Image (cartoon, rainbow, N blue to C red; front, side, top):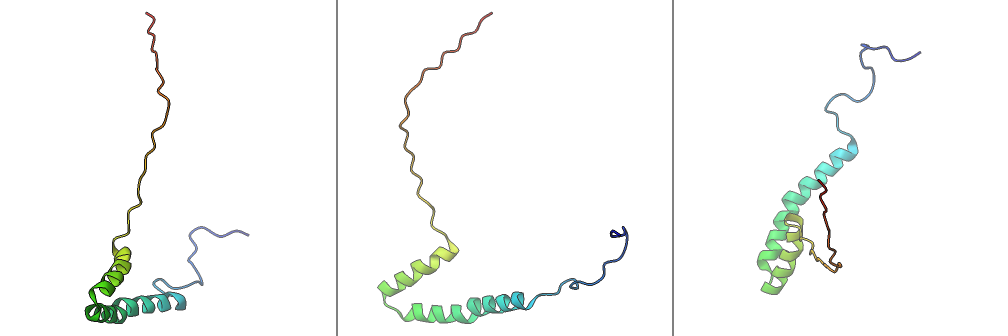
Length: 87
């Protein structure tokens, strides 16, 4: 016996329900972007110029990723293409 078309859904999670893992990840993200970010700002503000640049470069990649270098090696033999039009 197959599923009858037009039958109402029974069971399953209600709409908008979040699993415990999802809630835990959202809580961790909130902690990192609020309290940890404030601490990082304090550490960077109190650090020497050299240490500041190390911290700054490490954090910068999360906001502006490095672009990959593009190298082009054009070492192909030149070929002559002849087009003959017969009328």
